[in-house]
Image (cartoon, rainbow, N blue to C red; front, side, top):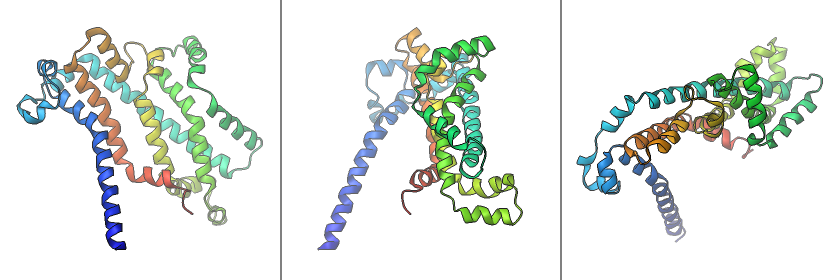
Length: 279
């Protein structure tokens, strides 16, 4: 009886998870099918009709999207913003996290408390002061300006996360490396980074998703030549209204890149999220 009950319980849980997965995947499937239909088909019927009439589907919208200079420029602008902003945050946070966790220097605790205090500062508070500063420095309306803003506001959480993860490493392991003559840089690159790879991968995913999907910061700090895909899609909606043949493939392109990144680092992401939950 216990085996039967356990089997029924597992079947119920699996059925529930399947239902939840289908609910979450339905908007994605609808967006994909809409991006493969013509504007006339989208205006006359819902996307689900393509399941019964697959002849509606074609890649004409994506061909037109690739010929749209505004959308292609916005896509590469998004890449030029997201990749440096993620890389800089991960590199600086890893160095700072190791320093706060294992190096003794004057003012270490007060400085770390200041970093933690910055976590509660809303992004909206810094928009206007930073915009004024960037205007004086000539960075307003440029890709480097958008990158610097994301780096500055992503670092407090990143340093806090990696410092706490690095601090959980056994002290004996680092002391043994020092006794063997290893320098701090060698210990950091050969020991700490490989052990901290799950947390670093989790941080990279979070930061990349945040920057890739951002529209508020880009809407304020980027001009027409440096605006990312999110702002370009919003501009297309404002200019042309219901041009689904452009918006649907652009939105799906904007969505599929973070999905690919997430699944590429899924194993490390799960390890980083679960780190410390089980001793």
